[in-house]
Length: 200
Image (tube, rainbow, N blue to C red; front, side, top):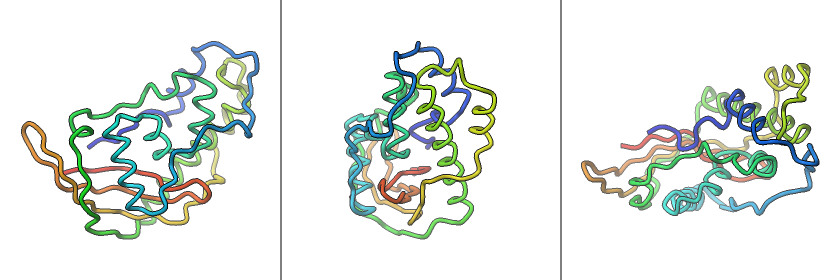
């Protein structure tokens, strides 16, 4: 199954999305301006349950918080009310899936962790751009754009990362889904996040 949220981290998509929506009176976003953080799950099982509940309720906002750093989502929404429009949900699965239990939890591979860190580097780079330029990137300098595209490090620290096999119940019109494999990782001072998913 493809990732539920697609395209938010593609820089060309985000640049286009933010540039085309006009400019606010203030072109910067204060780091103290935050939205209510919905991701307070204390452990992996609670996080999976909460994520599936958000999926079932078609809560795109909460799904975004489970997929990306809180500050990134907050700032994106503050800069542009259309920020979450690229999100999509498989309605048929979302309304029918029921959590049963965790079957297995294994430490994520170094390669997969490295890939997630790469995405977090892109998140932070885009976050810095949004904070500085708000929802109008027409004035972005080549220096800032180059710095964002060539960023090599991130403040987001992954303290735990696992591949989790989950037993679910989901009856579709022509098939039954009972097995879900999901990447779960914990960002320090932010919470559990959901990575790539596969269902069978």
